[in-house]
Length: 429
Ligand SMILES: [Zn+2]
Image 1: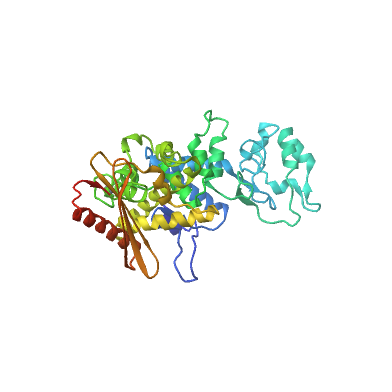
Image 2 (image 1 turned 120 degrees about the vertical axis):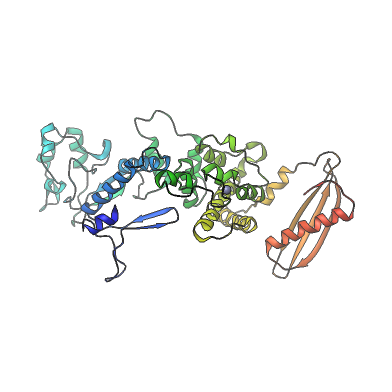
């Protein structure tokens, strides 16, 4: 649709250089960037294309979510008055502090008159023409208009995202708009509040939000829009790549949850709706976690989700094989980096293990294994404990320097050999 509008010269797109072809859009992984001139004409044609596109996708949850998002954006966008020449006083949002930012006429017939905001400004004194404002609008709306400051030096009108005090678009402000709608009678659920208050990087919050509202391009969602697409899982070829499958049921996801999230086993049937995924991350099972550390647990879980999606995209778009060990390492280093950025005192997932040590069954031995390394060498440690938590043996060993993933693997291998040499028949690692 966009290419057609470009061919018809209805929109201009953008050029990287004078001789390069004009671009109207770029699609990269799960992002689409649209290019146009910042004019009302180009913007209205883009909007029309998007409307047609969404209208053709009735029933798709992803695109329904996009449609809803568009309504939210319309609800939160408002003009910042410049010279007023591009603001239609009846149809554009431009008056802060009133419903929908659109003023109402004192008499309905006035709406038939095309009036620009600039028509209400005395250009010699840079002030409102009070008589006209008071005649045209309801008293309350006229008061709101007269309180809008007029820039002394005329500049272009600017559409800004108004719910944020600096005009910046963010998950938090979108959520504020969504849940402060007078039509909505329910309060936002606590886990959504926790998401936008979480000490996460913005991109991570956005990903968890998109999953919770099913606005993420899994194959299932894409197939509703593009019927010819192969819907099988990018990582394991399961026939349908749903959100629940890719994040919880796929063998890679299961292995990563177990490896990078304290051996967590997720039960997909408990994820009844996709909002449950956000709830599951922001309100992890409390029994095993100290209250003050809950955010780090949520962070670790969100990073597992992020890494699964990243690995899936690398496989889908670059045919890079997903690797649990390197994915685990990525999560670990991102976790440390984010925790360090948000707290003066650093804690690591390893510290939580001590709070959650579970004894092995009667007659079994549990081997706790760890590896540490510096630039010159690595060190392994193995602790054997019985069902009462009594330490039966403690072994340590210095090894050559190697990558962390290799050191951990070798430590496990050494622990198994030790158990074998000492005739341990049943053990937990
Ligand atoms: Zn899969």
